[in-house]
Image 1: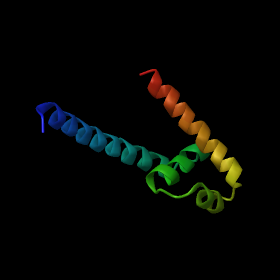
Image 2: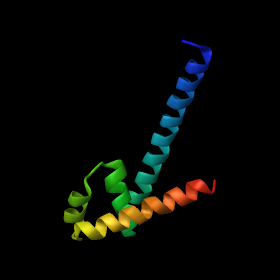
Image 3: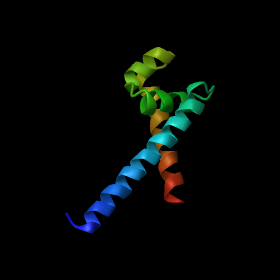
Length: 83
């Protein structure tokens, strides 16, 4: 293995660990949120529940939950693009 490949591997491992930490911290905040988009984000991205399961548990239609989650992901993407 070249030195470049090892450095990339280490960078990726550190980035993944940082991402998982941020996701955990967001999850703790969003878990008890009164904001529906934050709750959906928590259940989908942290607890890895399906959108159908989330819809059923929260009492909303699958289409509505899918739209809310899609809008949230678009907002996150736009925010990341401006960083």
